[in-house]
Length: 423
Image (cartoon, rainbow, N blue to C red; front, side, top):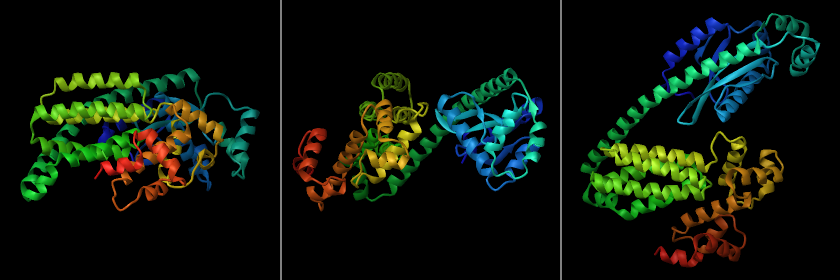
């Protein structure tokens, strides 16, 4: 869902209402799934759209068009124009905050040219569910026709307005997040005072912190954004409690963690030059920070930037396909899966998927499958009840000797030696 807290929607609605009245265009805010979620929907839909949407598949077609337009606008970070699945011209202005797509503003219900026989022929092909096509033709004739230049100007104007609104809200959001982080820290301190001594010792153990740190870095390397962000929050809370609020210690640990994250991001596929630039900017920022919450806040922003890099950035053309492939691998690594299985799941050829992985992640599909399996094996090695053979099978290796060879190549030591080092 679109988060009302991430933007001043009341102000945005006023802007869109005035825009709709000035241009006569139908405007709607939709989420990433193409769903108009009821917050705003200007002007009454034209007869053509109401007629299409009255058919069983009409709303589904409309939503699919909105979803595609939203994805493309977010991908290229600019207004995106195309014909909807019913045949009309629509455009989408992306709504994003910190590079995260929230949805888009959809403008539609117009034509850029006078309908001719070719248009009606295509209209018939696009709307086979319509029985009375003569009625649809009549409604199409009533649509407004505006020049491409005017259409482009309207899109550019709205894009600039939305972009400025998001920048303003970003500053507000950063202050809110810093305050929330401060509140969580204080709450953690109060909880710590109530704990028994034994529990306090457990929290203060740096071994626990380092264990969580390893898991966190593993998620960075795998590009697993949800788990990485969740583990980062636990790490920061643990660090604050352990350091007892000592700023010098916290700053040192935060700088150290940022460096480790940068290396893990590069290993996960992020561009090294970009990562180093982000790391340098981060170090400059925390040198001027005076409060612990600021250290943590900027580290969270840095991690988010690294994660976007390690998953090849949402603006890249084929991000969606590669991300779906990664998700499938993360869910099925324990099975005997190969590139053919992943490609079949996505309905594309193995050669095409292979090209996308090399282009987006600079590795092969099999390389990524192996990376996931080794990372999972490292975690399972910590369970003393599992033998090396059991770990091998659990992460998808059918041959224990091959598992030992692969594990040694990635970790630097044989599985059994690594297991014994944990004792």
